[in-house]
Length: 416
Image (tube, rainbow, N blue to C red; front, side):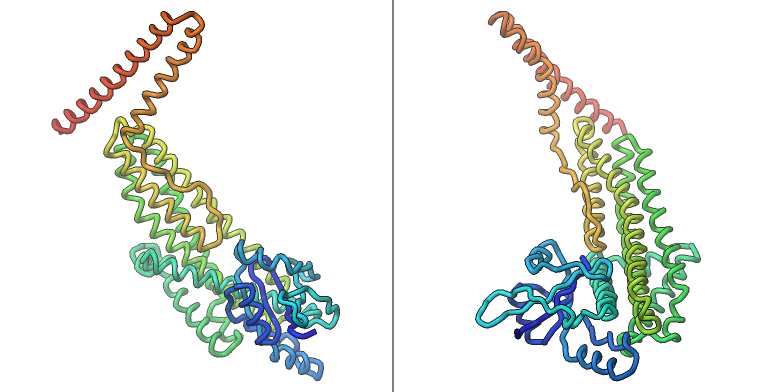
């Protein structure tokens, strides 16, 4: 059968390997955007020898592309029935397009398939993990550009010595990644430059998380709407800044992981699969830690918005300020989550108008009176009329109360 290509998935991305023309035709037919996977780097997995040379030639003859698995793209490739492999977390299939058949079909190649060798499959899994992390790194770069936050400036503004070291680590990692791109591997000398970087990055991440926790705590201690409006406007830009620092920390941690996988691929290819799984678990732990802290902040922001909405009658000017600032923060956190691949929960709150709030208060009061109305209907029209009279008095009282509140608030403002 002609047009044979391999599909390999690790749950986050899809590798498509085969003849360059066939690979491009498949991607075009399925409408899947992709980027180069760089599977030619697997040559270093096999060392030297005749069998190795043959494997290397086979690898070099194939094209490899990587597709980020979104919900939509995952559904598109699901029909090809990828099967679990002996490599943990990796599924694969071989597909082809025989004769005049328009659709790609799964075929059985058994031991003759390109990735039947476990070492090669583990190698591809490692390179796919790198591609996934590099995709996240690119998205974080876009995120930082979008919010226009310069992490270096934020860090320089801090007096903490540890945070100033982060700037130097940032430069060293970028330099190391540049060398990797030029050389195609990570040597002992190159790796020695960044070996101590993870500690500094972790310390900076912990500091940024503490800052966000401190913001949440400050909002918990501001029950008055006026105080809450003042405080939430103060913390809004600070939250954006510390989210930017967290994003940069995560980006650099992914860069270190990419370098680690290259180093293991080059020096200890037999340990590549275990190292890949270890890095994946550690990365998920970081995501969980960031998620808990930022979700707590979102919860406080939403609670503040709810409190402001419930008191909009008393504070018709300050309540919308609280809601809008809260929404800005919540939207920023959701955007931050999306770049890191964290699922966000509740969306931002809507600012309620004074009239809507007044109507709700009125309706609740009338609903309370309506319970008596329902029972009164049984007793006849006379009782019903009295109940309606009660409703009218309630409505008048609420209207008058609202007028007094507005007048008192105005008088207080004039005296101030």
